[in-house]
Amino acid sequence: MLRMIFRISIRRQEPSMKVKDVMHKGAEFADSATPVAAIAKQMRDADIGALPVKAGGRLVGMVTDRDIACRALANGGDFNRMTAKDIMSGRVVCCTPDDDIADAIDTMEKKKVRRLPVTDRDENIIGMVSLGDIAHKVGKDLSGEVLRAVSAHHR
Image (cartoon, rainbow, N blue to C red):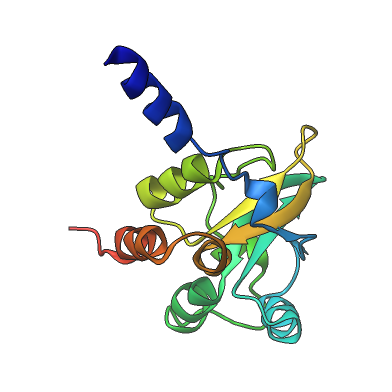
């Protein structure tokens, strides 16, 4: 009986999917001094909703289309003088290409983020993984769970 259970559990194990199997390779980014208007145009032209922000070659934040709408436009600041540094979210959560996609999904759920920059060992941005990327590569049940968890409002 024990052998049979052991064999069944081995057969059920599947190779884990890695972030590199799901991510978009390459990533646009902005410097922290980049004007918000330029960031908006860059996002429009690249058809993306988020840009990692670098300062001194290091990843220091993230600007999303929501940041532009809520922190720049809705707050009534001088849009023409604002930069990435003024509206970015700090404390960026990242992953590596060799991380299990399950770990990346767990991070997205816990941090309630829709995108994760993918960095190499030297912390260079080499890609991005988003909810959309995950939805195209993993099962519908799992991608639906992630979407619900990330989209849930804070209580």
